[in-house]
Length: 331
Ligand SMILES: [Zn+2]
Image (cartoon, rainbow, N blue to C red; front, side):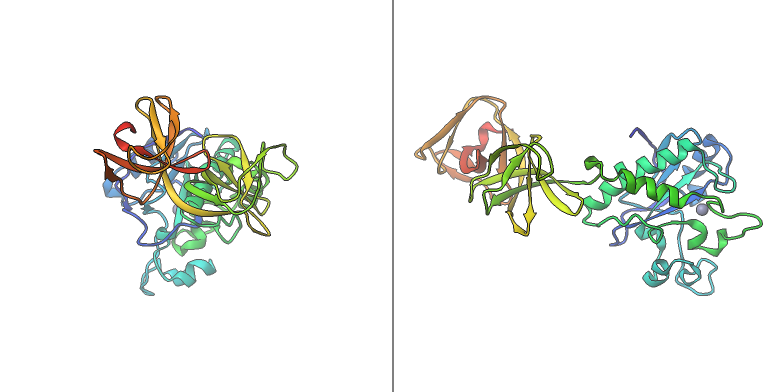
């Protein structure tokens, strides 16, 4: 989705060791996008959400999701009206710390009683699916899309829980509709993957398929003991699938027992000219193959190059096997 990025100073860098797993919704005090933006970007406001959603559905990121925005903070002192103990959320009460640390916050431009526009609803659903859920997964958090983890500011703090005057984000706010639309569309595989850069070793002869289903066409089978670079791990209907790096080919990661075991991280490189890859480091290593210039190769992580015959040799995975190449010819 298209997100316009701005930089509000009103946040903590990082999340004080927490990983965000909740979403807190708000409405802006201002009735227009321009007034809201100038307020949240102003240091004197000491307040900003991670995301701001305009009436027409345009989305602005004001604080990056890895940082705790100052939007629905709670206090640890019972004398403070923002004390976490006054929250209506059991999670907020049990964590006994600032709610900003573990929540993503999103404000809707003036929605009065919480009756946001269809464009705002659709934007919120897409924001959760394509930005927040992948961000959670990348942090190792299993997203829980439910009413315990998706709440309103008024449920965090009594300061915004005045039904007569100001209730944030409003009594009519469509939590359940947003949640069911996210869940209904979450089967879209692109919303359910974690980007990775791992080499996996096959411990079986798992099928390589055209899709992530046991009925998808089989292209080939992996060779037991061989190595496979993986660039995405999907969780679909409770099954885990891997995508073979740089392809649209998939294998099941676990089926009863593990079909693959993670061997190492990798980084991708390109050959800068035609090069020989060898079965052991050094010019005396047997030539395994010759690669043309600009071939993408997968370099084994965590192993420093070894200097032999005047070249720095690094370990690569090529067509399932471990090979070596002179790093002088990789970029
Ligand atoms: Zn609020």
